[in-house]
Image 1 (cartoon, rainbow, N blue to C red):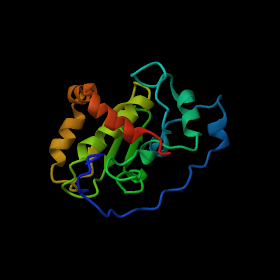
Image 2: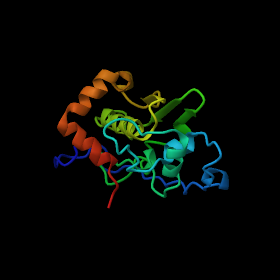
Image 3: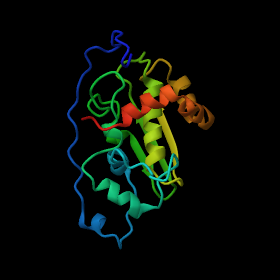
Image 4: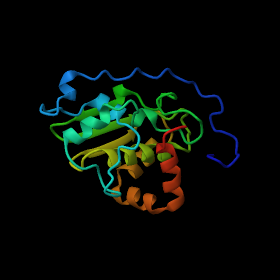
Length: 189
């Protein structure tokens, strides 16, 4: 487990190439034009984009979010794996093609794929993704974070936990668990 000195569940994971930086268009740089939120933006939200107003959601709508996406750092793709010194993108746990955004309906769905079918870190990884989205997106978004179907032995139980707002809130009141989530969300030095 993380920091425990125990043997790693997946001691030799396959490492994938990171996708390139997202090109920024002139339209996105123009604060006068509306800019909808799409799957690449969710994949690329930067670390540290959380609201400065406390534990709630990021304020504002699209203009505030747009500045986050123009930064070279990234959101979901740059979340750290709890066991390895690698990002979720490098382990192929998250991929842009598994992020679905409907800006008009204010929904974001993210599928993640644990590296092994019995990964005990699946709930922690899902919680880290969900917390990053909660901290980064305006409150209007309904979030759905779940395991890619057929990729984990306990996917239904993990998905049920991640979909339960009360269980997520209770988990984040656990100071040790919150510390581990924050380590997953911190930028690697």
